[in-house]
Amino acid sequence: VGLDTPGPASANGVLSARGSTNFVHPEWAGFDIRGALAAKLGKPVTYLNDGNAGALWGHFSLFGVGGKKTSISAIIGTGLGGGVIIEDNDVKGRGGFGGELGHVLVPYQSIRGIEGLYPQCNCGRVGDLESLCSLTAIAKSLLPYFLPKFPGHELGAMEDLGQAAKKVRGLAERGDALCREIFRVQAHALGLFFDEMINTFDPDALIIGGGALETGAEFQGWFIGEVRAAMPEQREEQVDIPIHVMPNGDTAGARGAAIEALKIGRQGGLMAG
Image (cartoon, rainbow, N blue to C red; front, side, top):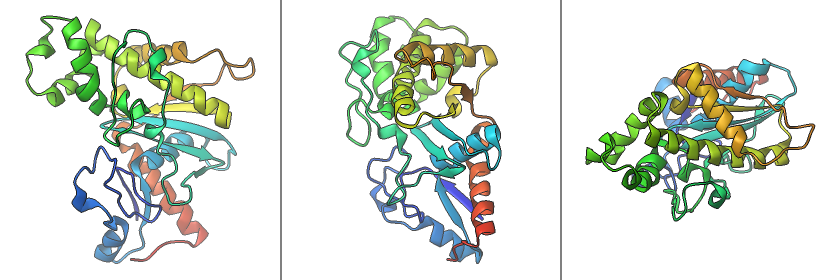
C-alpha cells in the first residue's frame, strides 16, 4: 500500500509537527503513521510526504518511467509542498526531509508592490516560499496587507480571513483586481524560487500543482506568464524551460504514492509494520 500525508515527516513516515502548516498540534510529533497503518492493515506500506508524492506523479505524467529526466514541482495548497525528481527518483535526503521546498527562502523584497510586507511562515522563517505562496499565506499575510488598499472590497466584510482566503482563487479567476494582485505576488515568489532551482539542478521541466491552479486554462496561462515574468533573465540554453500544470488535481499525491509502492515492491523493498 502506498501512503502519503502532509509533511514534514521522515523517510519512514514518522511525523514532525514542528514547522508544519498541516500538523500544528504537538501531539502528532513523532507519530509513526506508516508503521501504524501497516500494523492495522497487516500489509507492507510505503511512505512519501504529499509534496514528494505529487512531484513523483507530475514527473511520471510527463516523462513516464526510465526517462532519465529531472523535474522540480511546487504544489500550492494549505502550505507549499513539492519535490525534486532526478532520474525517476524523488530526493528524500538524509532523514527524509528533502524536497521541503516551501521553506526555501526567496528574495521577496524584489517583488513589486509589497513594500513593508513581513511574510512569516508557521515554521518561523520570514520570506520562505510558503510564507508567500500558499492558502495560509493569503490568510495570514496577503489579505491583511492588500485589503486596506481596496476599501469596500467584499472580502473585507468577512471576519474569518481563513474563509475569505478560500474565495480568493475564484475571484482572481473572474478578474477581481485585489485577488489578481495576491496571485501575482504568489506567481512572482514562485518565479524567484524556480530561478534558484534552475541554477541548482538545470531541470528538464518545472511543474506547478495544487488547488491554486485548479482553474480554467486562461487563468493558468496568465499565472504561468507571471511566474516567467518574475524570473531573472535566464541563460540562452535555459530560457525555454517548460512550465507545466500538474494533472489530476488533489489525487496527484495518491497517484504518486501508488507509483512509489509499485516501484519499491518491484525492487523487493517493501516495509512491513
